[in-house]
Image (cartoon, rainbow, N blue to C red):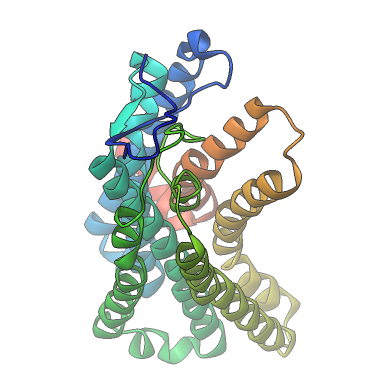
Length: 312
């Protein structure tokens, strides 16, 4: 069992301890099978989506190209969290080195904010498709999509690049036990025995400039989409236009609701069972990547037909 606390303030931890089921570590294996199943479904679902979009010429449209980028982001998030989550629950391997923790932290946050940016791009895609369908593919050409993708990736990378250095400068001389089976910046910085004001302020800047800004842009996009849809005379055409947004709306809810749930539980639910905190944290990380391909497979006729053809 790794040492979890020190009284000597001169000690600086080189490892952190990850937590499985709080207070019931001997039952960690209960979570191993469902988590393993979730990861298998995540990899299978997103790889199938990527394969279908790549091989089906009719799906080489902006909407599906953005979907393929979303699938890559979901795979990246799954790969970032899988080693430690399955390690804790399956093999009871709870230690993680300081550098490995910082690396995982960087990639988890980067893929999260990358996905947020992709959802914004997909909202813009739906707006253009409904507002100007005749020039849809001209406005969102492959070159434009590439530039948007590079901009989203650059934003996520540049905003998160200082995080490892802000963490590495802190001394960790007290508890080295994290709250989850993976490393997050807010969770890790709370263990430092030094002033973390800079980390808190920078974290707030990142949240406002990504999550806050993205939510506002998505809301504005859908207000404009609704204005356009209401201006369509035909009731059938209105429903058809709105139906093209259902999958994207589901993806937005799948991404943001668990995030808000975890935030609410951490802020207002300190009296709640630690098991609930653990479940919410795992849902927040593991569920969106597995649900996105399911939603798009069920709600998108072209993808559904191509998948059915693959397995016939």
